Length: 345
Image (cartoon, rainbow, N blue to C red; front, side, top):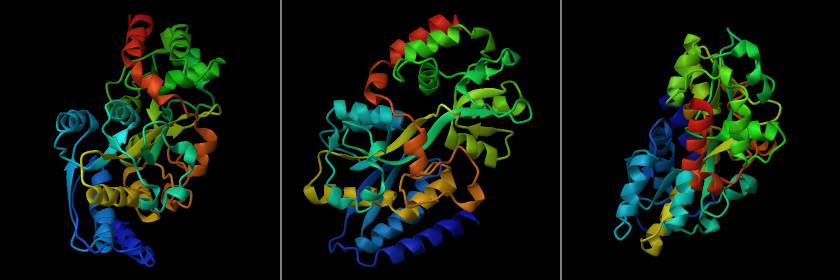
């Protein structure tokens, strides 16, 4: 189905779901921070029209950017905030909590929240997960068999053909778990890889480069994000993704409301962001961006069935291991220095 028709159909379903939901009489003018990469398409074509039915005459403007570019602007404008809420990864979710940026959600403004397993939400930030990706292993199916374990990456046949990452550290966390250590013991994972250093190939500078290297056969296997890998596969790359038997980790997408606004704007921002948890938006996010839904009532669509990089909320709870986001985020420089010394020197 064409992307636009899919989103229009989702919006129509969302309109039907509005029956019985309260409408707000006064109009709203909101500035919301959204990622691009398809997320903004879902917001424009599904969430904004649905919000317009709940809040007639509302005006929602999107600031489309990245966390790295937008967060410093949010921090610098905290006395006169430029956006009232938006999307953040786990690192910026915890940074914002430490910097005192986030307003507290009122659960009544997120009607779909009970449909999201509580285990998936970050602890201690006040934010809520609205989508996620499993972190596991991407591979070239023409070059290797599907890996069944994280230990398969140590196979001597893969000398110089395994791609690691120092952009995120989830692969080292799962390596630590593989060797019997705590999942937060990134140092143990790095030191285990130091024992298999000969297998390490080029270090990708981005997920997109990971997919290029796998497609070309310069890497055969690599640490990777499930949703991004599946997107590359849909674009014709020779790539597949799997979650090994030991499991993977959840890479969470999180909504936050920003302090500094009047109570009405804060409430309406919560209502707006809460629509991302509704079934119509969840289906659209899965279809368009290949992220995984967190609403337990949403299944993987038929056309994406069998794609291991896209999981249900139930699978996320059962197969993905949570770790201490704050601890990892607070020690980024430590992990990067360790990797440089042990694996890149």
